[in-house]
Image (tube, rainbow, N blue to C red; front, side, top):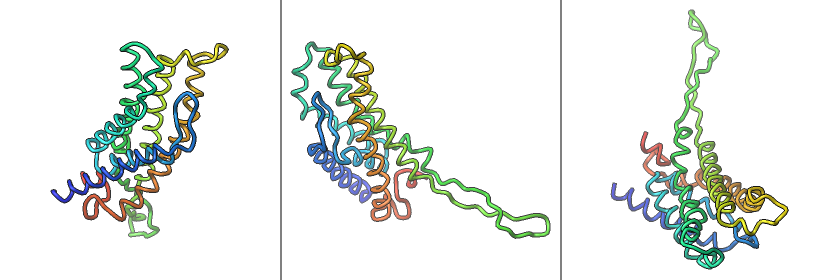
Length: 222
C-alpha cells in the first residue's frame, strides 16, 4: 500500500508538472485569450484514470490554480468583485477541475465485456458457446478525455456570454461569438487530449501498472 501511494504521488507530480510545462508553450494563442497547447490537458486526464477521482481532482484543481496565477493580467479587463469571481471560477478553477471527472466518466467503459460466441462445436444437444473478453478501456479513456474537454469548453462558452460580452462585434450575437471564438482553441485541445490520453494510457498501463496484473484504477478496484 505504501509503495502504491508513493507511486501515485510521484507519477501524479510528474504528470502535473508536465501539464503545466506543456501549457506554457502554446502552439498558437488567440488575441483575446485562449491557447492551443501541445497535449497539455492529457496528463491531467491520465492522473485520474490511473489513480482515481481523488488524485485526478486534486491535480486538476492544482493546475487550475497555477493557470489562474499565470493569467492574473486577465483580471484587469473586468471590474467588480463578482466579475473577478466569475473569471476565477469559469475560466480557471471550475474549467480545469472538470478534468478531475475523467475517471468517473470512464468507469462504465472500464469493465471488460464478455460476449457469448458460438465456437462451431456440436455436443449432441446444440452448438456450444465460449466467452470472449472485449476490452472497452480505450473507448472509455477517449470518451472521458473528450467529455472533460467539452466541459471546459462549456465553461469558456458561459464565461464569454456572462463576462466577456463586450468583446463581441456589434453585428454578432454574444452567444454565437462566444461559441465560435472559444471553439477555435477548445476543440483542437480536446482532440489532442483524446489522442494523447489513449496512446499514453496504453503505454503507461503496460509499463507501470497500478497493481500487479491491474493496469489502472478501475481494474485495481475490481
